[in-house]
Image (cartoon, rainbow, N blue to C red; front, side):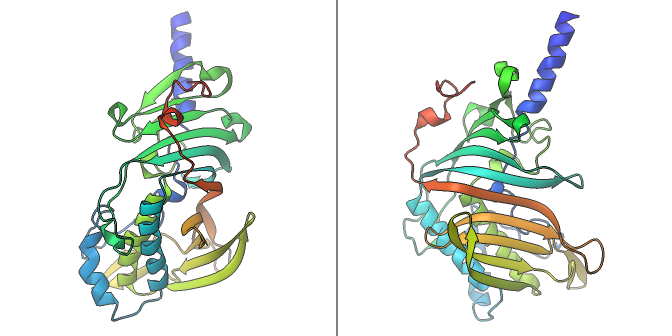
Length: 314
């Protein structure tokens, strides 16, 4: 009976320990990642060059989303060349299985690995993706306080290490980021985390989105987010679908909002909404990610992503 009780407790610890795994904040499937139309050419974040001919062709036919795409390309080059790491408090709200979960807040550290590709900040689409090391610690709500997660890409068989807060933190577990336990209560795996990932998604999916045609883009300057002044970009699809060559292609969202710190060329908040359930109603929030107290180029070291760090409880 004692051994059976221990197994039950260990299972509960495993479940709790992975609730914070799939954050992406601002970095996960962020915009435009449901594409049913086989006529759209696939692309990956590591092969942004593949759409070069389409982009050049599109330049002769201006589109409403072009200014946002221009920013994203410029910001990606700047981020890859100038930013080696950052710390922040990540606040996320996600709808899972039709239910909007309460907001959660966590301490975050992220360090990029070696840079590959172009060193030319003007060659936005030739800058290759970098590996990441991530540390997360739960702050709010109280039930999640003290949870810690470390994930170092391409290390430890690519598994994350996690433990619960409080007395339940005595057990540490290792999980695949895409496992069912690691994804429990999260929309995205930790592999989708980071500002660089977000910017690449904006470019990749935005270029495809412009091919579909109908979209409204609005920009509002001097919008306050915390104690910062940002530019707010809003992307609106008035209708849920568009017909392309006789096929109905479904948009994932009705409204997307992106708050940009233009001084540092980084997105600080992303939120997406679906269409109102009733005509004339308010759009429904699907996901929202905010970087609070973002500090770039802190000088993070291996110790910040080491389970033996004396400041951690692994």
